[in-house]
Image (cartoon, rainbow, N blue to C red; front, top):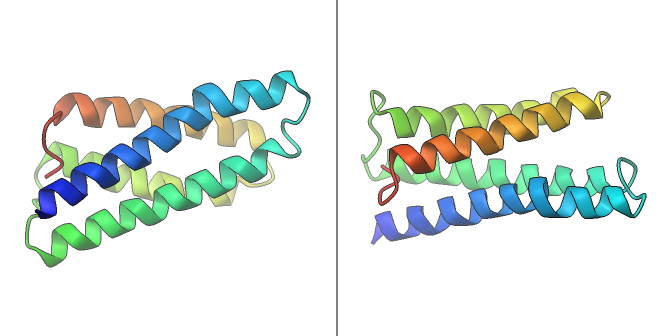
Length: 119
């Protein structure tokens, strides 16, 4: 049951991340709302993603499912740390976009390494 919740949370996190990178940002940019108003949307998306990642980590540690040597769990932790580091780059929105594309690439790697399991 816990693994189903983790799978749902991973799907929500990666889906929100990819939709912001490849749908929301280009549409807002084409309408002239980026970076001024578009960064608000991306800030919320990254914050919710960081909360989902922390929730997943806490759930795995609480249920003793977490293995520190496993690559998918290490990728999940790196993604959480990079999501939290997003807010340190607030004055430099172009660096934030590089970080966002890096997060989406790590999400692809995470899904590729563990397609049917999170932990």
